[in-house]
Image 1 (cartoon, rainbow, N blue to C red):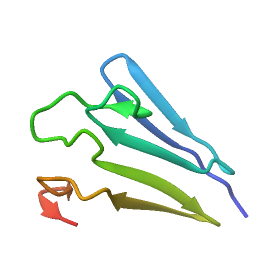
Image 2: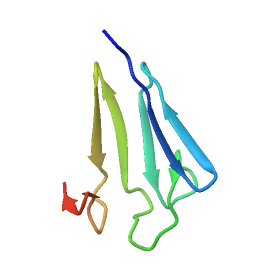
Image 3: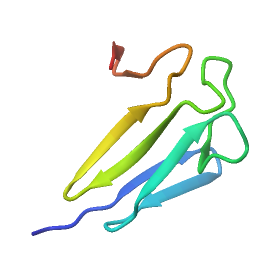
Length: 73
């Protein structure tokens, strides 16, 4: 089985989500793993969870929802 990593970057910050990693959080609050300082991003917007060979995005009840390629998920 090929194991892949997910790399997210924003300005000068880069997060690598490696195989075996548990969860990382996304939002405006400084205690998130990936901080996105935009008005439309909630303080605790979402999190990425690795379950076996899948990456799952979980919205954390964000005010504006989550969009990928203009589609709300």
